Length: 273
Image (cartoon, rainbow, N blue to C red; front, side):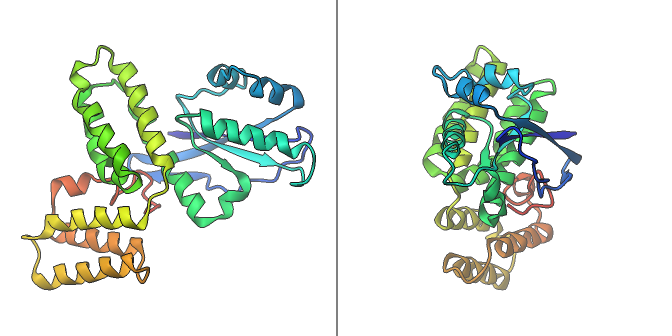
């Protein structure tokens, strides 16, 4: 399997630095090799891109990129911030961030920020798994299974958007075209994932998951988990520690639905997002 990223860099004559990006992600289905396509931006290509109406998919095709397989875009500016031409790359970033409903976009300098890196990897991870699904024989059952796996992860990002996704999937059997539905659904959940997950939403999710162990583990284990969740809410414990405890309880008292949740068992298994 392959994960395809595009890096647009400016100016076109810049000598680009190597990206500090892992060459391989380990996924649940096996290793995923990372392919980064470097595309120089010129005044002409930027002007074409910034001229309304914004036919982004057509423009991307002209660069040899396809939105059904692309999992991320990195914008790399080699001009100083106060350079007059830096404003153009800022406009490109704003346009892509606003108009691309599916593919996550990030500035190269933001890859060094741990929280933004995690958010970018998370979005790529979800998109990559769904794109693998699109490459297979599509079925209603597979789409419902995907949504079921990601319910808690979606909830951690936006409760209102999560509640809108549910009815959309519930009516899937009435959709005239499964292919068109899948693309509409992908657009909706990738928009949802743009919202940063909050401590409040994560707390809501882990407390929901805690409920599955109410009658399956002893009082001491439940009390320890409750205390840990409280510490997380106060900023005194990590979310990773809460998830690790939930996985330990899941191993001791298996639950089929919990075992499917990407919130606890991400597609990219090296990243506890």
